[in-house]
Amino acid sequence: MTLFWEKGYHATSLKDLEAALKMKPGSIYAAFSSKEGLFLQALKRYYETFRDQFQAEMAAAPTTLGGITEHLRSYARMSEDDRNAQACMLFKTVVDTRATDPEIASAARDYLTAMREGMAALFRKAAADGEIPADIDPDRLARLLQANITAIRFELHQGTDPAALTRLAEDMAQEFERLRLRPN
Amino acid sequence: MTLFWEKGYHATSLKDLEAALKMKPGSIYAAFSSKEGLFLQALKRYYETFRDQFQAEMAAAPTTLGGITEHLRSYARMSEDDRNAQACMLFKTVVDTRATDPEIASAARDYLTAMREGMAALFRKAAADGEIPADIDPDRLARLLQANITAIRFELHQGTDPAALTRLAEDMAQEFERLRLRPN
DNA sequence: GGGTAATTTGAGCAATCACTCAAAAACTGC
DNA sequence: GCAGTTTTTGAGTGATTGCTCAAATTACCC
Image 1 (cartoon, rainbow over the protein chains, first blue to last red):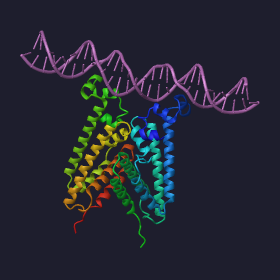
Image 2: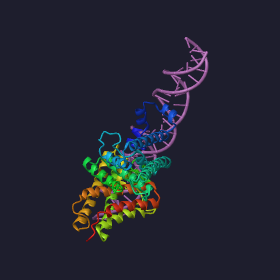
Image 3: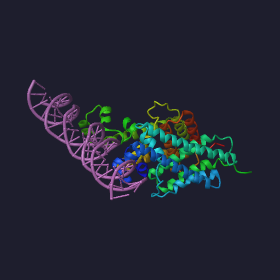
């Protein structure tokens, strides 16, 4: 998974996979049936891992909106050697395979949609808890949040310097902070 | 350029290029020296074209800030058959080549930096014209704008439906609209 | 139109691609 | 410890990769 995440589907060869898995071609094909099959399994694992991690982060946060803004800021704190200090694998996969491998691209898109639905649920919860106005479309906010995460993770991928990254994360966090209803 | 933009560096083969250029391998190598050389020229052309187009759009806008927000909204209006209805080639290139072809990736990064500097210049102009507060860091705004453009173009790439795209573009435009100084 | 230079041609190069399969090795139940 | 089953092995498959170069063609100048 890490190898595919790092190099992408096209740039990863079976030689690379043999070395990473410490398996010979025959075993790889017996277990995963094809490079595409192996990639799809890796992608699924990535999605599940990331989703669980995100949900755990949100569950641990004192408030829903605070958890969301804190998540945005957390990307800026990632060190270079952090496994997650990269673009999202789902998103890299869509870019890498849209024009050449439609099935892989649409699997990645489906996972992105599932992630976004999880985010929409968070905004619905925040509205129900009176944290944010009840009349704002949660799906719309989820789309905006996902767009922001995509963008900041691309900056991480690109190697943007930490100071600029912190400012960007702060600007994005502020955009959601503004929604907060102050009790009067 | 279009072919490389569409399929990416890795997924484009010399066979594809021969067909697109209507040239035989020998001629291609006489003219461009390598696949990498050809790609770098295509990338340069992409950058110059996009930069000029962006600058022309900004020059034609009645106000600087209005030009910027209008640019964001313009992505939502793109039809599927529009050549630009895709992720940015610079950004796709960074994703595709960062782990495998550092020289190509850094060329793309340099062009992205140049684009961002152009955006920062716009914000400086808007501040000088009294359109936005003078104490906001133009580089910071430029980074945020570029992040937003990256994200919305990725949505375009992904095939997000037009209605959701319009709402996203509007949310992003609003974020910059908020900076506007109302004359009192 | 003849001689020289510049360009194009396309068969073919070694290397690598994803992948196969018969044989060897490692397990399993008795 | 032996037969039967499962798994692993790795040399080798044809196709494709980026790329070369001698030969053919075209362009140019006088």
